[in-house]
Length: 78
Length: 78
Length: 143
Length: 143
Image (tube, rainbow over all chains, first blue to last red; front, top):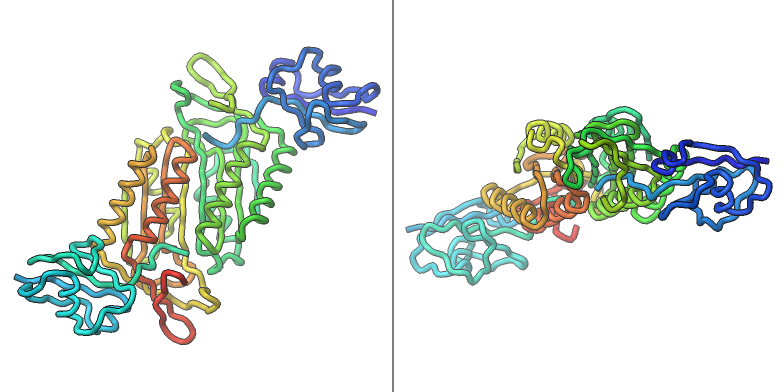
C-alpha cells in the first residue's frame, strides 16, 4: 500500500533527497504525492511522470505507482 | 587558335571519343562546337560546360576555351 | 536497432563501425547512412565549461528512447538505428550522444536521424549540470 | 575544410576520425557533427548490381565541390567540413561519398550537411554506370 517517489536534478538537490516511499492512503493525484513528500510549494516548470510516462499534476495515482518529479529536461545537445 | 572539347559518359561512348581539339575559326557558340566535333544532332538532355561552368548551347565561346558535353549528372547517392 | 546508455566515454565512430559490421542484413542493402554526434563544448553562454554531470532517470530514458526509435522506424523506411547516450561525469570534447540511421535512401536517413535527436532532446529525461569557473550550474532548456 | 576525390576504396568513419584529430582548432569548440555516407547498394530498380563505374570530369568536379562547400559555410556558421568522393570502379557496399560537418549547433550541422550532399548530387559532374545481370547501363537522374 505504498507509492514510490523519485526526485531528479535541481528538484532533488532542493529537497535534499532522491527518493521516498509514501503510504497511498489519502493520495489521489500527482499533486497529493508532491505535497505529502516534498512539503514545499511546487516550483515553476515542475514536471512529473507516473510509471515513467509524463503526467499532469492532476493525474490520478494508485497503489504501487512510481511517481517522479523533475525540472524541464536538458538532454541531447544544443 | 583552338578550342578543347571533352565528352563524358554516354555521350563519350556514342561518339567513340573522349576529347577533341578544333580550330576556333567560324566557331561562335557552344552549338557550333558540338556541330563541328560531334557531327550528329545533339541528343535530348545534352548538357554543356565552358571552362568547367555549366553553359547553355547558345553561349559564346572563344579561343582557348574548354568546352565539355555530357548527359545529366548522376553523382551523389539516391 | 540498438539503444545504449553508457557511464564511460565512448568513440562514436568506432561504435558505428562495430555496430554496422555486426549487422550482416545491412550488407549491400543500405544506400544512405546519416549520423549525428553531440559533443561537449568547452564553452556555453559565454563561460568556460570545465566538466559536466549528466543525470538521467534510467528506466524512463530507456522507455522513451525505445519509443522514439520505434516512431522513427514507423514513419520512415529505415534499415537500422543505433543510439548511444552518455550519462555521468563528462569532460569537454567527450561525445554525449550518437544517433546513426541506415536507410536505402538519403532523404529517409536524414529525416529519421533528425527526428530521433530532436525528440530525444525534448522527451528523454536527462539533466545537465555544468562545472564553470564560479561553481556548478544546472543548464536550462533555453541555454 | 577539405575536399578529396579518391580512385580507391575508403573507410568513411576512419576518414572522419583522422580529419577531426588533425584539426586542433575543433577541440572543445564544436557541439554537433552531422555525417552523411552514401554507399553502393547491391540492387537498384529491381535488379542486382554487381559493380559500378563512376566517371567524373575532374577539374569541374573539384571546382563545384569547393563552391558548394563555400556556399554552405557562408549560409551556416560551421566550424569545418570534410567531403570525400570516390570515382572509378566500385563494388557493392563500397562507400561512394562522405560529407561531414562540424558546428557549434545541431541545426546548422544538419542543414549544412544536407545542403552539401543535395547540391553535390545536382551539380557535381559524376556519371554512374552499373554492371547488372544483362550488362552495363548508365544510371539516369530519375533512377
